[in-house]
Image (tube, rainbow, N blue to C red; front, side, top):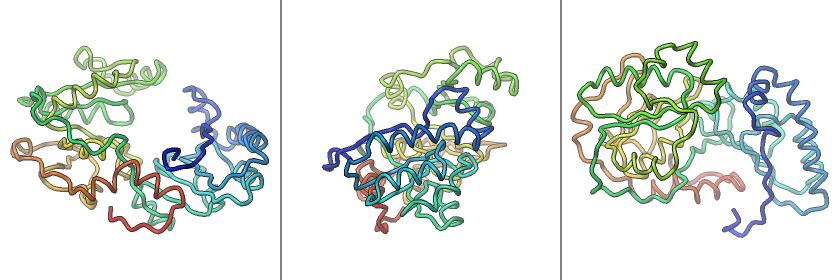
Length: 309
């Protein structure tokens, strides 16, 4: 936004970032929302008198109608936009605050139709530059990401379904408390190969190296979501094949059978032909539409879209 000429003030959409706060917010959203409202009221007071043209709220999980109203009163001439990169089922306050915005968009096509919001998928945070196709491929498929819901079980099933395919798996738990909960709920995690699970995220350079060495990347969306994950977009714009549980990708401009294979969560399988078929490059316009620059341009005013996703 700054590169496009805007002067930007940035504030976190949650006053606290700890695991305990996030857990309490999910369990007691209304109580925690009232406690959090003062933070947004304070933001409005801090910026009072500043000329604000645009207010863009992304997810806003801790925001309440009172908090949005305070911001609108502080910036009466601003255009208020709201964007959801998570499902309403995971952001329970969204239907309460959405009517207070001038425009609303979501990454979830189904919820866009349900609530009458604009559909705007997520983006690739890197330019559309396919990774070096000449890099030696050590893995037929790989997964690097946080472990939540049924991800660990699906990846385990995929390993068993493709015993002769080489793979790399690195699952990350953001806190010991979350790790303990998953280990109790899914004891089979304790038997996963050494190095599979970590409490520390993988460094970015090592992640890029693994992606370069992989023929395909695994994507397992949260079962309470249907929107396309950022992993989906970044994988395909990087020129890597995608193996995903999300059937919605078949309805998108990103889809081509040489690029994407959809698996069943309970009985995943991937034909040999998928690994062996050359990757059909994305059209240049499609890659541009799913880029960060286009995403920012669309969300600043949430103007009527001219892009086909």
